[in-house]
Image (tube, rainbow, N blue to C red):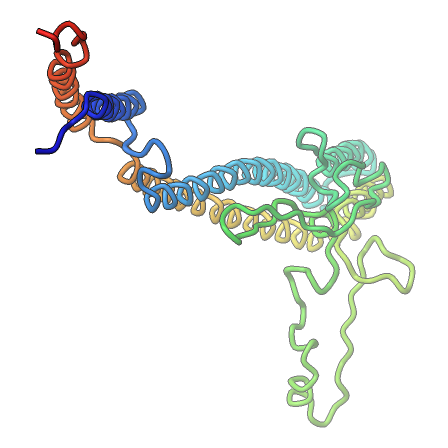
Length: 337
């Protein structure tokens, strides 16, 4: 018969009590945090997957903040283009009315003052800001893009923002494409075939290929590229009104139409970018919801199960205390009886 020493029995009881207390402490910690995994060693695979999901969700939250900034910039840009379009529509209405012979020179000179104010409004729109950033300056967002003469001082840079994983969108339009347009970017191409000489040879097999040229009404010097300039259109209209030149006024109508069409095209582009950002936001919100659900499945505790286990462990701990009470409280006199 093997002899069991008192020290061995005491150590065994203490080990059982500490083990029961440790389990109880772990269950109480899970109950207070409502997490089934309180440390990585509890479930390494679930912990690793949970960390990856949380990291991805953190990235998505940053993408959503980027989207908010992008939508703000695009909204201000669209509002500015809308205001600029209204200015050109008003100028076109003035040109249509004043191109007839119903008005005398005095009336046209008086209306020229209104056109000057329209040009000042266009300059104000061109220098619009979001906070301290100019929206039409390209990369030069901290300096005024247009001076009082309507000269562009910015660049043609495109600021892009990542609104989802590897998806970048431009959030600005530079002043070059909004207020100026050369013949290559104009929405109205008088003869598209001029860019394809082989087509023209088929159209004119026995003739010389005709040359196509265009010149802005506000441009008088040779060597200048054909381009629509919103400021020059407004200034030319004001000068024509002051000089009582109805033919020049009538000739500006097509230029105003071209500029208005270009602004509508740019506004459509801004709207399409905003729409893509909104779609990206919806996808991210859906992904975050799915990831949050998956993290909950991996790490969250079952409340009913946790409190049931706590109750059971309390009973086990109490039984352990009672079973060890007689031995731990024994004295030497008890063994001598």
